[in-house]
Image (cartoon, rainbow, N blue to C red; front, side):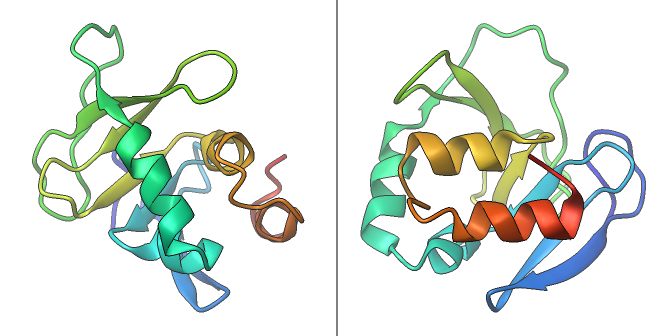
Length: 129
């Protein structure tokens, strides 16, 4: 699978039984549909996060293509705490794209990783903060 940002081949690593696609060039992470819920172990709380995402029509970032279906992804805003965070979501719900450190930021904002287990694993695997 190729990175939707820099088009480099991504590596796949397993974290807590979830395959995470990671671009070593730009540091982005792709999660297939359902993987965030499985990774966090809390589908209800992850569902609250998904409900809070709202489509953004006014952005300057170039649209990215889903690495699965190749359709342009929607830009969605996550703004539960702190400044708005713009992430990419496949319009067919194939998955979510997180630029470098955005997954960590989302986990912290949504309180999906209060014991920091996932964020520590991401840091060890990908060198992300």
